[in-house]
Length: 97
Picture 1 (cartoon, rainbow, N blue to C red):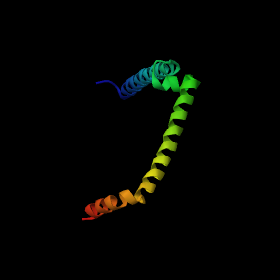
Picture 2 (picture 1 turned 45 degrees about the vertical axis):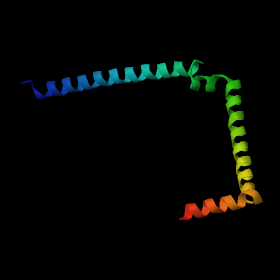
Picture 3 (picture 1 turned 135 degrees about the vertical axis):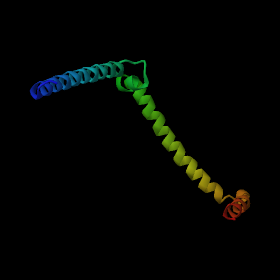
Picture 4 (picture 1 turned 180 degrees about the vertical axis):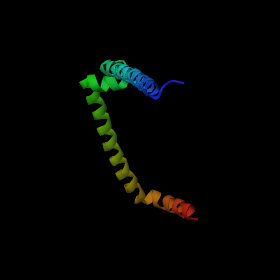
């Protein structure tokens, strides 16, 4: 059996060594992620590095929001249309039962 101070030294040495390996792996992974973010062969890289693609996506999202609002307005107007009022009333009654 080893004396206590040697056990503590060895334990401390292995813990530091293991932590350095962990830090090295973490740093290597961080470098890989950073490199991938700077490439334009993935969606996140394109969004970060291509202003025209980012603008196109913003425009698309804006158009979707506008279209959704217009669709909501049209559906509300359809509820009051005399041709559909009776049909929608029957559907509402069926859903309540």
